[in-house]
Length: 477
Ligand SMILES: Cc1ncc(COP(=O)(O)O)c(C=O)c1O
Image 1 (cartoon, protein in one colour):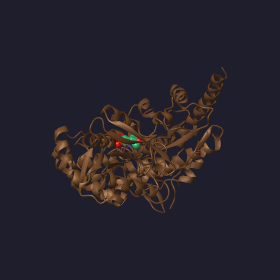
Image 2 (spheres, protein in one colour; image 1 turned 90 degrees about the vertical axis):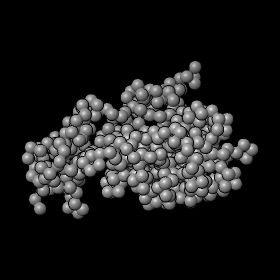
Image 3 (cartoon, helix red, strand yellow; image 1 turned 120 degrees about the horizontal axis):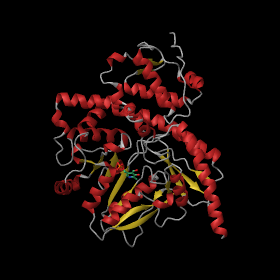
Image 4 (cartoon, helix red, strand yellow; image 1 turned 90 degrees about the horizontal axis):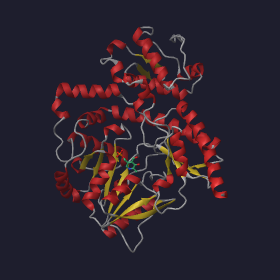
């Protein structure tokens, strides 16, 4: 099959528009103008990358974006082919980031911001089609039918999802749709704990959770984190509730060992205590088999499982869920009736259909592959070029890496300096209360291409050098 000619494609390296978007723009424009005929085979990613002088993953990202938008079709073994543009129902300009003003789109998130999915990869077209279908068929579903725990079809879809992905067998009636994992944590804390009571929280741990614990008048009981994950509460003051991140400890990143999981389950049974399993980003595991959820072992007897859809899909969607044991169902229903559901009804039916139609998993597989490549890139750059400043531990999962700094650095002043220079890093020590040795940088990698990370790493290096001088000088004086 004859491949399409190269069409004098040029990349503007001085532009604020990321390279992969420039490639998308070029192909879209040629498709719309008719320069490329439907059915044309695009150059193989490796060849195209070499010709443009960019990484192969940049070309793959661009092609996959166009597949998501309906411009290209990917055929295993034979490459990417242009779709008939006339078949595209919605004007592409309206459905992609092309409609966002250039400044807005080039700077939606600052480099290394943690926990951010790349919204440029979002399958806008398929999402819009799903919503359009519901509008034609039954528009009330976008505004009604939330009941106490949220849209029932979404809860069914979540039950199937956690059964397949996390080894949890739950009835949809046990699932509460929430406004993200944070809302789920708050709902559980409000219902299960009274002011003055102790709550086991990981140290270092998730700062918004700790703030909420304090705001509710609860007493945080810090659980140290060692090589096997969070440690059990000490014997003399056992809390009735602990909040854990067993699949991927936040912020350090390790998975809790099977032995420690068993110890926690035994402890919860003995103490008649509850475990809040915050599984906020478990879908992002880049090697090996997914680690089953603690709630799967426990058969949801003592565990309340919390998941987030913000990380897979969009932080703006603000959807998550809690799966509660049968024993607590009635109590949660009463509590939810009193407080009301915070999660918006609008995206729930479309999301249910997105999951059951398989679009959700196509998106998940795609972003996981792209994030995996970005993670590999960041890991290797840190190991190769930043060894004088600290070390990075590869935990094969998540949306951010922790770069542990040597003693000559101070993570808080460093993050302030980096913010002034346009980066957004988090200091590891901000997430620690009593835990010793927390001095590091939390670096998100999902929302940034290699071309975006490259100059940001140069800025980071200059900040590190400056910070080392500052810390050394203040130690001398
Ligand atoms: C440990 C942990 N739990 C919960 C969340 C919040 O998830 P959501 O955005 O769904 O509220 C985060 C966000 O990064 C997190 O790191």
